[in-house]
Amino acid sequence: MADEEVAVQEQKSKGKGLIISLIVLIILLIIMMAGGGYFLYNNMKTEQTSSSTAGNQMAEEKVYKDFYQVQINDMVLNITNTKGREKLMKLSFTINSIEDDIEVLMDQNKPEIVDLVIALISSRNSEELLTVGGKELLKEELILEINSILNRAIGDNSSYKKDSVKNIFFTAFVIK
Figure 1 (cartoon, one colour):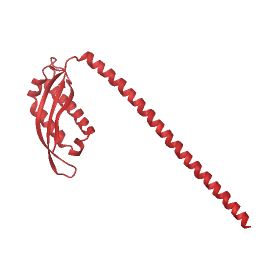
Figure 2 (cartoon, one colour; figure 1 turned 90 degrees about the vertical axis):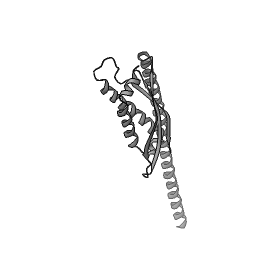
Figure 3 (cartoon, one colour; figure 1 turned 60 degrees about the vertical axis):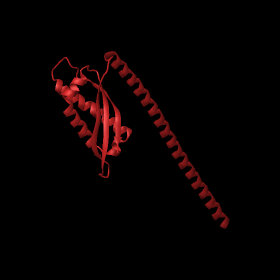
Figure 4 (tube, one colour; figure 1 turned 180 degrees about the horizontal axis):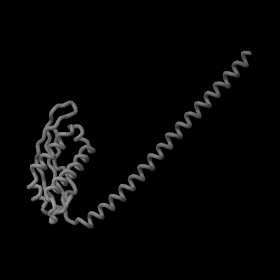
């Protein structure tokens, strides 16, 4: 009888080992499939982004051959960190535009644009602004909002181009 009980326990342990092996194998297959899917997704996304970016750049180069620049220098702003402590920020940036009179437009609307920059910076904390993503988001919002201000300012004047600001380059971005 003892021999039979030992044989039954050995069969049970072999069955448990087989089940555990199958579970581990299934988990490994799922992980490999997920990794392969992620790899394919990223490659397709990269190819689509680079082809659409190249197409957009070619279209912009055909339409806009010249860019004009205006600089906003040495803005000193108060910001806070996530703990609510105040910090100082020095910000300078250059605006790239397809409008040759961008300097005149910026001078005429400088108070509104400076107020916009202060509002956008004040709505963020220093930790967010120090990340690459935070800076890129700030650039996108600045371009959108500055274009909005300039579009309102030029109104129906057809001698000016709408949405003329195409890029912003930070030339100083210091938080202390």
